[in-house]
Image (cartoon, rainbow, N blue to C red):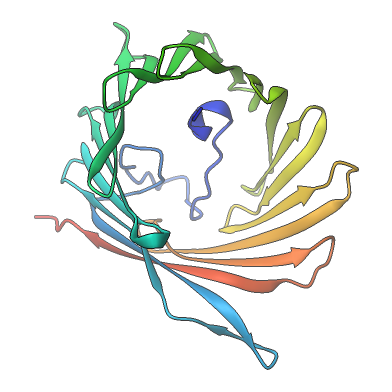
Length: 282
């Protein structure tokens, strides 16, 4: 299967707890926004059911556990899926926070590993995904030209034949990315752009083949509205996400509500709870 990390194909706009100009929390290496000397993270999720017109939270279900070593260079993530499947991801970083290798396991069996390569200036130039037999499954090549970032990717079958490919251009100052993907299913073009607001909020618009498919509107204080569009431009559905943070600016609670069409009547769908432990300071 052709799998290209989403953070490499689009602009990553993160939701943070509001920070003052003097606050500079140290972020853990990795794609997740984790701040401070985090040791473990336990994620649980609960859904809501409607009982006689009242939405009641059902029992929590364990979703994942993440464990960090003290300097954050080793991150061990275990996810629990349906059917008693257990997925484990082991990330290794260098002391500067650059990803070196990622291993993916399913029920204890290695499924793939991703190796990152850098140039003499320590810039990421290539990521190779290997199958358990060491054949190449995916390849990404990164090119850096000033404020422009270009990513080309290829997916291979077990015989080494290209089965899908894509090319993405990220314009960092403009907060815009454009991508074209070619696969047996056809050719698709996507575009993502972000516009910031003076109050710290932002709006991300995602288009596919010239049509707006999704918008994300964030207020910069933990609230996001995700709007999905039909091909004719009408609104298909909306999802509202409300987040709460601890004193380290790490998310500890996330509530998701949904609404059909352009309705303003949101109903609760699920709530996520995050329990975080920290390494103690001397």
